[in-house]
Amino acid sequence: MVIIAKLNFSTKKLDVIKEVLISLSPKPDFLEIRGPYFRSECEKGIQSMTIYEFPEDKAVDAYKFVMTHRIKPYFNIDGFNFSCNMWLETIEGFQIIDVV
Image 1 (cartoon, one colour):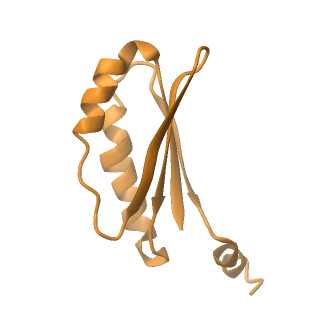
Image 2 (image 1 turned 135 degrees about the vertical axis):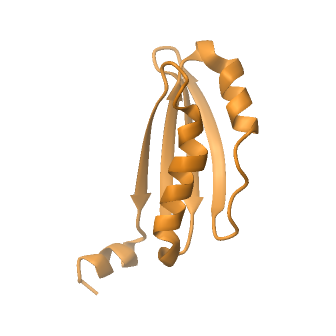
């Protein structure tokens, strides 16, 4: 399973974003992290995407870690917003809806 977190920031807050980014907590052993990947758009500011991969039995722990230790530290930055969603592999999705 994966969590895909997308974060959006104002370009006026680069120094604060950098400080938060370098102070983030280390990841737990069960979690693999790809990213963060960044891009910038004039109208939307800075956008970041990170993919967190973990075993199915760690879904609750993974979501708590991402929200508490990877997203919450940015909450006080003006203009910050985010989306954080859990995604399933095809077979996991089929199992949930009882197709397999």
